[in-house]
Image (cartoon, rainbow, N blue to C red; front, side):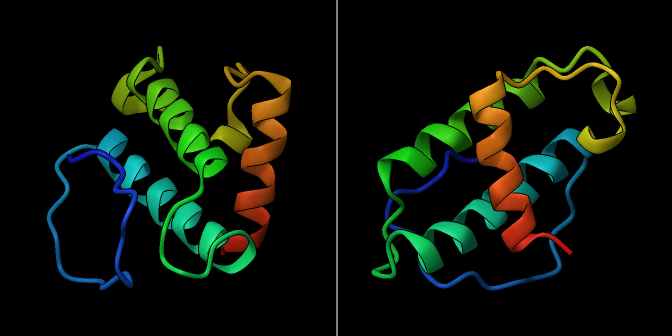
Length: 99
């Protein structure tokens, strides 16, 4: 999948086949961070620097997950791979944009 875009447009949902669970989670977190940043930081559809850093950190955590395709949801994982400050930031995003 492509890198997070600094100048993103309004998200359009389409039927896209995502082959792996990790790729699906990357796309999900990208959309959640976009929603969060657009509403709380930067309504001009430009991702702010702190949200970009958070996305890149989350992407790296997903790529290096020791469970690979058998990865549980972060909430149900017994290994917390996020640093405490980043974990708090991603929780804020998930509380805002999650189901």
